[in-house]
Length: 452
Ligand code: GLC
Image (cartoon, rainbow, N blue to C red; front, side, top):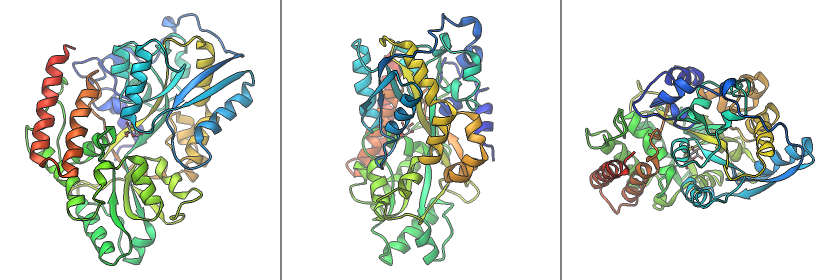
């Protein structure tokens, strides 16, 4: 099984016809033609560096990592301000829902305003780069800075030769399970979706837990992430190699994937309101002890072990199941967050000082050890003391990573066509076949009319 680094290294050699960079690791699977030529910043391209700022106030728009206290954003900013007492960072709390957050930011930045620095997910570089919503960091930061990151992450933040963001933390879809319940029922961690289904049914029949499985299927980006995992495991793809056509109806993979997502609700394993569930809803359900299994990102481990949780000491984390035992581990959508600089910012020097701090070893160690995130810099990712306390890092080398088709600046439309129809199918307002047909038609018409 390739390690995350091996995956990234291999993937960054893949070329597509469209110049792109998908997000961090995600970038990877598809087209990185621009990345291969651009690479991380070359010293020769450096514009006059603004130096290290010592004064000023900047704003940082960031979505919460977790609802558990203390808020990681505040802890990180306090540590920064301690080191740079004359720079103040005002946190602008962004929505947890990636789709709403992206819409807010694009309106603000498009209108000439917005925060100085913003956290943005790994699927944004193509779209944000295409619209000029982010500063090319390679103009100001040297190669040695970009070399500190794990392989592929900078490539993922690069679009048409510009490094549009600095990798903040990496995520991937994982399975969280109740160790105590599995032990009571003498079960091992499920390796196939069928096993998970059987285990959940058994636990429900014994009234050991309220719900068998919770995941993300609301009408937003998270549903696309979950769907990608079933689709890839079933052998399917969303777009063709040139990002110009939907492959959703080219064979039965998409129907198989969505049928599985819908089946959790149909069989009573998942809540009837599952089609409204986002990360926070599914997390809260699991944390309150009301679900046996949870599909979520790395932060879920620390969040399930934090103060106020009903499942402290009872949670395990593993790669996602597959359709077949031979296919185990299943596919995990690669996600994560980067730090972007708004081109309208008036204090670039302070912005860069802040970004360098958050991507430095102190902040990255905090992210990995306190909030179970996957750090982005190699030194912290490899650190034995970090690995010891981060349960997630122990399982990531066994995962199969899949990127969302974010190489195209039209990714927001592609994803919307997916999540709207996925969510409708899980809600039962559209049949699986109709949902896939509608998504397919919408993606093709959006791609055909985009002119990109
Ligand atoms: C997580 C992932 C991010 C993804 C989002 C979808 O925050 O890290 O990449 O876009 O979930 O809800």
